[in-house]
Length: 235
Length: 246
Image (cartoon, rainbow over all chains, first blue to last red; front, side):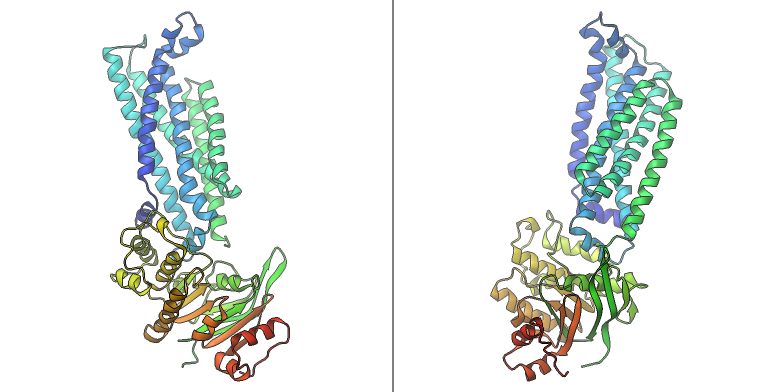
C-alpha cells in the first residue's frame, strides 16, 4: 500500500496542494484576527459580542477552517479520483496487475492524510501565533484559560475528522455523477449544512460529536459504494 | 511456427444495455505470430480488445490468455500483456522516462534499460521534456514503448500507428517484426492501414458487425486474392463472404 501511495504522489504534483495550504494558512490567520477585531468595529452592536469570547472565536474559526480544508480535499479528490476514473486514464489504471480497490484506497489514504496533517499543522500555527499575540497585545476582552485551550484542541480534532469525512462523501457524489464540479459543489453544500449546525450549537461538544459520528458512518458507507462500483466497473 | 495458442476466445458475446455488440466471436492467436485484426469503424474491434484485457466483462463466452482463464487470473494475465487501447494517455508533467518508470513500478517489473526502449521507438533524445510538449506521433511512440517495456508475452495494439508519419510507420513495422522474432512476443494488432497489416501479419481476423467472420492466414489470402489484402477485405465487407480455404 505504501508503494502504491508513493506512486500516486509521483503521478500528481503534490506541491500545488502544499502551496494552497500555505495560502489557506495566511487567509485563516487573517480571519482569526478579523473575528477578534469585530467587536471594536462597532462597540454598540450587541451582535458582534459573539466575537468577544475566545471559545466562540475558536468555534467560528473551526467551522471556517473545516469548510476550507474540506473544499481543498474535494479538489484533491477531483484530481486523484474523479479525473482518473472518469477520463481515459482509467483504461491505463485498470490495465495494471494490481487489485482495483488497492489503488483506490491508496488514493483515499493520501487525500485523507494530507487533509488531516495540513489542517492540524495549520491550526497549531494559527492558534500559536494568535495566542502569542493575544498574550502581549490582546484584541479580545477575554482570558485564555485551560478551557479555551481544551476547546481549541477538541474543535480542531472534530473539524479535521469532519473535513476528511465530508470530502469523502462529496467525492462519492462526484464519482456517481462523473463530475469534478459536482464533487466541489457537493463539498460546499455539505460544509454549509454542517457548519450551520455547528455554529448553531457553539458550545455543545455533544452535538459536534454526534454530527462527527454520523458523518464518519456516512463517509464509510459512501467509500464502500464507490469501491463496489470500481470493482465491477467496465471501461 | 508453433500451434500453441496465446489467445483463445470462445463464443464471446458482449451486450450493452441489452444490445448485442459482439456476437458469438471465436478468436485464436498462435504463439509467435502477428494477428491482424480488421474491421470497419464500430465493428467491435476495440470491444474485443477490451474484453481480452479484462476492461470489459464478456456477457457470455470464455477467454483464455496464455493458458489462463481471464475470469480467474486477471492479475497474472495483465502482467503478461502490453497494450495500447484507443489514444494512449500519460502523466503530462512527467518526462517519457518518468512515465515509463511509473509504468514499470505498477507492473512490478524492474527494467534498468529504459533508455534502450526509448531508443527502440525513436524517442531517445527527449530527455527531460514533459509529455505535454510531445507531438501526436511522439505520444504514439511512447505508447508503444510503454506497451513493450515490461517485456510482455502478448501485445494488444489498437491502432498503434495512428498519427505516425510514413517513416515512423516503417520503423514501427520493423520494431513489431523484431519483437516477435527476437523477443518471443505475440502481437494482436488492429489498423485501418491495410497495407501495414499486409506487411507484418501472419494471420488475419475480420470482424463484421460484432462477429469474427474470417480467421485465416495471410498466405492463403494472397493465394486467392493476388491483388492483396484490400481486395479480400472489401470482398468481405461487401457481404460476398470472401471465404478463403485456410
